[in-house]
Structures are given as structure tokens and as C-alpha cells.
Amino acid sequence: MPLENAPKHIQLAVDLIEILETNKVDNETAVAALSIVLEDYKAKRNNDIAKTDKT
Image (cartoon, rainbow, N blue to C red; front, side, top):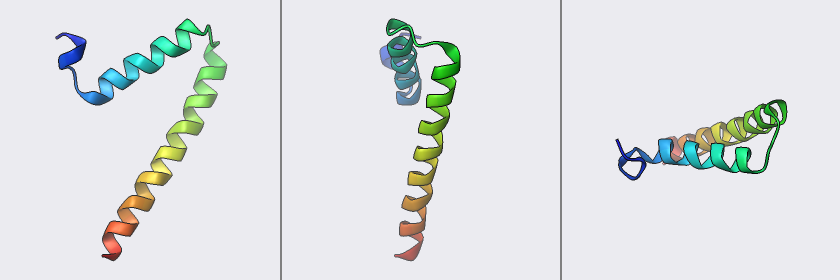
């Protein structure tokens, strides 16, 4: 399947991997940074859900 036909989350993942590899980010730094990003976006999603539930 061509990347342009892939789901948006797959396209974003490929883009993020490319950015990390192009910038020669070491694995430990990438994992630590992505863990922070993941937790941040999970919190944002939970806040959005909580706001929706209140309406």
C-alpha cells in the first residue's frame, strides 16, 4: 500500500521516524522524548473526552 493511501496515524509515524533518523537522534533520547509526547497527548485526549462528557 502506498504511504499516501495509508491511514493518517501511519503517515505521521513514518514522518516522525524520518525526522528522528535524519537528525541522528539516538534511540534512548528518541524513546524518552516520544514517551513524554505520548503522555502529553493522552492527557489532552482525556481532557477533550472529559469536556465532551460535561456537555
